[in-house]
Image (cartoon, rainbow, N blue to C red; front, top):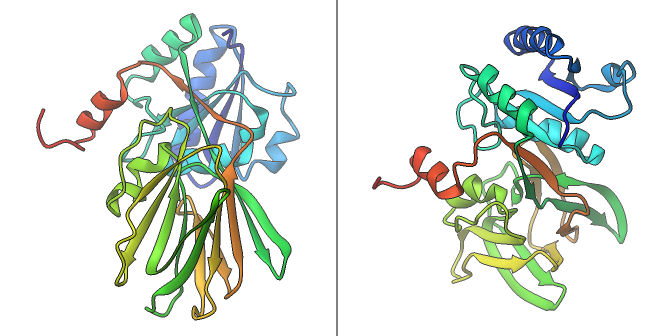
Length: 280
């Protein structure tokens, strides 16, 4: 994969990220790479791009910034690479201390593309679509401001699954299995698998266990009539109020996330490094 055009994406309010982006652009210019910077929310900066699409989107920030940028620029269908200026670094894996070495490797060899499935969601009220979007990590349906459990009817493309009363339900991608999913008792799933993970949160008087569904399935969550109010959260960043009778329909998105991997350390080694395992 030839990389000649690079878009550097940052948050508008992050002066440190923008300063680093300027340093990286000067470094790339010496290597005959065309680059430019865009600061979230990107609309104005996109009008001034010197090319229709870049070969690579380099994100400067933490995993939260990476999630925002991916959802915004995903449909370009180009690889993303993150320089981790945050804490976790599951998606943004390049160290800010060694970015020159790692970017040199990318420009020379192209790296490896890790393809990650995403979720497309649609919210229906009274039979009419009210909103739609994409999730990288997870969709969470949870109780509203009042501390009362919600009732949910769950269906798949094969028929009814279950009706539960709980604090919430998480629908995760394999990439998101290391986020809220694992904290709520869900499984760790290799991020390159094609699957949807359903993880209940504090189920009341029920034995509904986490489920791993094939990516070919579609999931429907209907807010029960006994629920006063529920809330949908997308990747922990965007929220929608849900009313009784509302439906959330979830399926695999038609475009995969392409993550450029500088070093292929392997999923298990990454889990060990991030201290998901006590031993080793």
